[in-house]
Length: 317
Length: 285
Image (cartoon, each protein chain N blue to C red):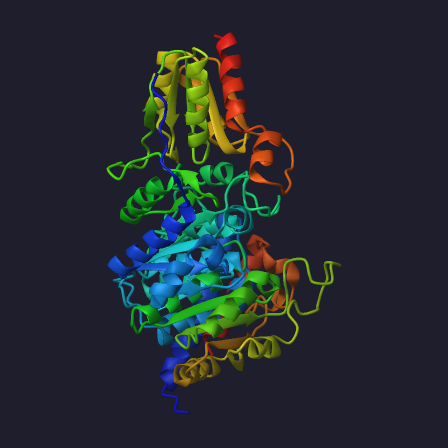
């Protein structure tokens, strides 16, 4: 049995800061916009090493996003960063009217996405950002699984001419991908092949899905793991193939079960290839502040819950 | 302050404004929808921008170094469209497509639909921030185009306007000129009784000054004062400028002036006829 070997953990936000610094040094058009959270999001790396490319917009997210739109019309490529909660909820009208509808080349990075936001609680968590951004026409929605993918994704977003939203996690995650990893917008990544059930995961849930797959294999269940780094545009073909091959799907995301990856996958399955499916995500409830491991258990998104869902979905086959 | 304009130029500005007012009313009548009061108060400034102040070329609406204009009070779109048509951006005849399916003249400005619109607006408070981004983009890239943005007084109740005011001042955007269309009326009214005569924004001069802007107050229907204010703004450095244009909502047609019901009312055939007659007299000035 192949046991997934994960390298040591690194923080997405550190790699985000370094990669944006490099992009800002290589491309005169790239600017970093901060909503006064630079030392949390790590965009302070740009402020320290390439201050001319760092624009402090203050604690005013709506203005920051509209300014980003204005900058983009002059030919620049602004990267606007704040917590995912504020980007996706406080400034979404600005993003829709002035970035998504005009299809402007603005990159939006939502730091501290999901449930685990360093004991900051429900005001600072973003469990709806995928759902919200995915409804905007022209929007690309990305959720990396590790720091290697953060870098590759940012490079792809930099080459892509149009609005991109990327959600990042606060805390360190195991490195899944090697340096030779090739990221392509809109393509799923088959991390593990099995025959009984497919786990489709995005963002931080991918490393938890690999843990769950190890446990399931040990219990005799043959598991596929498909990592879905792009939620929009969605790799429909990969979902259909997974359904055809294993006949049962579990989705998982550090996000509400409503409107995110699980909903997106369900939409494809219902229309193209209905098979039994279960979603692992945060259910219809408000969360709170608390230590990571306890939060994952209470809100039922730890690898244990992925294992449980896989066993349940098998019974529906 | 040196002002270089001739009587002939002033006459032209008057005539174009009267013509634009006629187009606004005819278009709203034809489309059976749209706003009248706000476009009528804004139109003298809009004419001045496109016929006098801005460095633009209707043949090259996307020229890299053109001056930019953002209509932050996007519901006055028909005022802007009328002026753009008169300036030669598109045929005047096309105004008849306003609000129709597949039209380039959307109810609120869509920058991707019509070349010459520098930003999409409609949801209030956002345009001024985008104009800040344009002016900042010019500074960062050492480009010498200027950015102009018209905001409404009702719109000034949006908090984002003041976020933008703060950041424009912080980055010393002296290549940015905002114009407040200070017509002192909004849709239903600040007092909430539907017959408000209270101004939607109190003491705009003091407010903008305290945010670190140059403030110039003028009669927003007087072409000489508008031209002079834009000239003064060009000479001011180190800060953005706001021109408080004191205007009359519905200006140019007696029964539409200062009447909040004309914010977005469609004229009847008889009202259209009366209005056009009044505007002909205006044009003769």
